[in-house]
Length: 638
Image 1: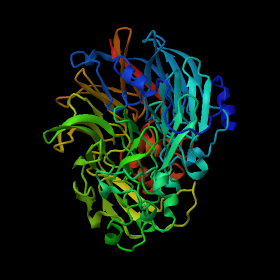
Image 2 (image 1 turned 90 degrees about the vertical axis):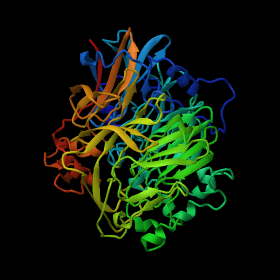
Image 3 (image 1 turned 90 degrees about the horizontal axis):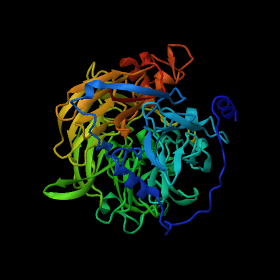
């Protein structure tokens, strides 16, 4: 309530609390907007109707008004404060609301939603704003392991659907901003917080949450867009029934884990599965033809591997019986029931915190002489996976950054061939590994032009770590549950990130752009022959997608961890991007605001283990010198 009182002084909000209906099973039979509306809107090149523009998460815009011939005249035309000064990882959406172009976006905590009328696109007008004022839980802030970010909202059926850090899924009337319904989805007292985004699939909104570093147990839930009633809920670990496995799960690849043996339950020692992580805390994608949702899961709880194995050697813990299923897993689930069609675990018995939550991009490409519907996933573990999304067949797994923890991924078994000397295991034994726990790529999304489906534009992180597991001291949910000292450092001095064009079939880069700062923002590719992305140093860039040459750049007011979008109104193409340093990598630079300049997140900035290794990286790359921000910048050719 204290939060609501503070916000009510500055933001006028109309609130109508709606009650969620009873639990139902299956999709409604009536014609409904839902994902069909997003699919139709994505055919309009002027719009950006969903977080990834389309439900395949390509982040490709067909617009070409801004191109190599005129990008030098690209200038900022307006900016808008989000109302928050923490990390901004998401992106706006641009939709048609009864013939009127509208932009909607949501800030970092406390999750302020704004609606902008774009009828005069050079001078947008805010028509309403909203912040949830009832039943807020400030304890979500310290329980959000890696900053209080929000990765975006959705529009369908006249509703803006978004989430709050403290666990609510909320539907607002897109015209008025009034609350239509609100459901409690995640519970901070159990370590659960939502950074999102949610996914619109069929007539459902599907949501996960984060919290693996706070002993949460992951699950994915689906709610009816119409009224917020729960339709299905499936766990990431536990019994076959709780996970929503069936006798047909992994039918093509039973080696990935078959129904009938409660394989997940027995892949943790004792009752550790109850704190077994596997939270699906980032991006989901949807194939409407297959009617499958694709969503990946995070790390298996605490970072001290021996507490997650009933054996005492590296070899025994990696023989397959203690894989901690289904953490680090790409799930393909039926949209109407949540049933698992297939599930592939990328990093069994994780020893590095290589969360598997990164986006699953859906394209069709020729593989070994045959056109295949594939899913492409650039994982934190440093491998880029190409998987047949119809049945889970693993087609490629190429390294896209320096990887020394594994020799390769065996395409027959799907298992990585781990290298013992780079695999943290024993308590109080320090082990070096590349990439670091933040991964070769974290949540920052890639972009791909579906007409050139093997070439991906990838923001990468290029640093390594030393990881020293610690003894476990408690098993309390909602309390920090890590038990490891992690020190992160650049792989090469002066180069902490690269932006590259990468071929997922050959495993080769066409070009790459080195950067002294890590990359934590997403990519946008357009038919104007350009790729856009931003750096943590605040440099927003346009790159010739063929040559890799930076053809335009502008310095913005803070570090960029947001994802650029392209849209068009009034005859002009626009590029918009959030600016505001944060996320796990930028957390030390923003979470200590108002305290001593020598301290961050309550820790000494010289403590190399602070913020689970982020403090050392922030110091090494100068992130403490980047000011906080919370702005949306918009550009067009002048």
